[in-house]
Every structure is written in structure tokens, then in C-alpha cells.
Length: 119
Image (cartoon, rainbow, N blue to C red; front, top):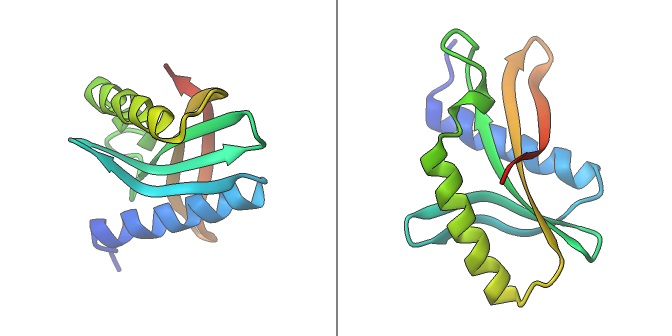
């Protein structure tokens, strides 16, 4: 049975968040919006690293891998949101942009974490 795309995306984001929390990250914002930008997850690692995470969940790799769907326009919007968050939080530490790519397997959704995916 095929899962509707919005449900697949929601499930992927939830699993992605659980994955990051299990890796020791702390949630700062979920679905942060600024103007036309939306960041799926903003997490902190320690006191000096803020990570902006785009979660991409695809039902298959038939048309490409999930990470390939983070367009240059999306990257620009993520950078815009990152500038706003840094100002809002008065953040002086480092930042990073990651992608979590999720695809279904027999055991559930497989998470692939691309750290420092772009700048």
C-alpha cells in the first residue's frame, strides 16, 4: 500500500528528528519559517554548533535519491533563514547545513545523514 506523500514527509521528519536526538543533538526549532524559507529542523550540537537540517523523504529512488532534490533555490532559502535565526538567537558559534535523506526499506525508513552538505 502506497503512503500519501504528505504522510511520508511527516513520518520522515519525525524519524529524522528521533535520529538526530539519538545522536546527541538538541532540538532548537522544528519547521522554522522566515519569509518564503522553511527549515525542517534546526538542532544544536553542544554550545558552539547550530545545524540547519533539510529532511528529504522519497518513496523510491526511481527518479533520483532524496538528497538530489535539495535545489539551489532551497539552499538559498535555507541560508536566508539561517541568517535570521543567527540574528534572532544572537548566535556567535559555527553553523552547518545538513541533509537527512530517507527511503523506505523492509525495516522502515533508512536515514542517510549528509553532514556539511552545502554552504
